[in-house]
Length: 323
Ligand SMILES: NC(=O)c1ccc[n+]([C@@H]2O[C@H](COP(=O)([O-])OP(=O)(O)OC[C@H]3O[C@@H](n4cnc5c(N)ncnc54)[C@H](O)[C@@H]3O)[C@@H](O)[C@H]2O)c1
Image 1 (cartoon, rainbow, N blue to C red):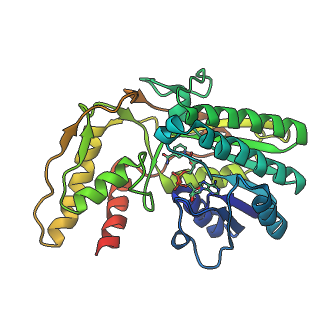
Image 2: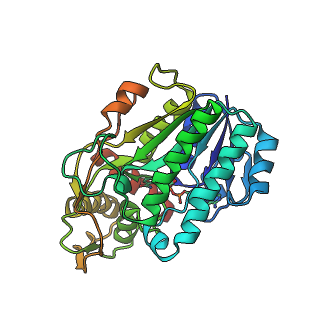
């Protein structure tokens, strides 16, 4: 199958590209490289550098590649930028999505998989939230992910596509950008490897559901390629992708510091410093977890990498980049 991955040069997108190639699929990428980079992709993968907000750039990629299916990862994904610039957020996450959906319809793509977010849809939840939890997005980013799912449902019904929205929890792993606001694992890994302390917001008792990037890629692979009686042409299926396991930021920092110190000791360096606590970040949810049991029923997917292993692999990747 030929699959076009938008945002495929980014963190999650590039792991999806790897997973698709490993299964023998043909892959092409459309990405404006605003946060992704060419180095994340194998040289053999065609990269169309273009903005999804520009219908001509989207049409050019589809006309060249003629994909059978689309995996839509490209997005404006900063919550704080969405608050400062809601118009920009809506352009990329709504207009950009509609451009990609229109092109998918013109090319009769059979399947469309969309990167949604459990974190921003469900709000503060202390037990893993199922997909039936009422959506309560409180930021423009959360609103555009929710609206994106509604558009996807409409296009699926109107044009007979099979549509899947994967609602990720907090994704981490190799290739995550340590300069963004979302990648706490990447940010702490980079700081600690440099011998600097992590800064934990407030008391650090903010619980999140951390899922490993290549596991999220495996969920996308299944959503793009698997036949399931629960996935049908003309309808949207929304599925949570996470572990259901909560970890607070203090615990997370300790796990990362443990792995970093193992690396530092092999390099003859002193243990990294203890964390500092900064002011709390306004609006941060206390707890957010997703229940991914429906993804197991529909896609046969469940996470395979636990937090300890995933953090070890992630720290190892950042450390290799510094060696
Ligand atoms: N990382 C997480 O924890 C998380 C959680 C929930 C949902 N998501 C969603 O997963 C998707 C991938 O996120 P990621 O963490 O890999 O981020 P990322 O920034 O690494 O990837 C996004 C990619 O999209 C590209 N892009 C951005 N705007 C574009 C545009 N206008 N036109 C073309 N390409 C554009 C970027 O260059 C980048 O390569 C996003 O849709 C994001 O909203 C991520």
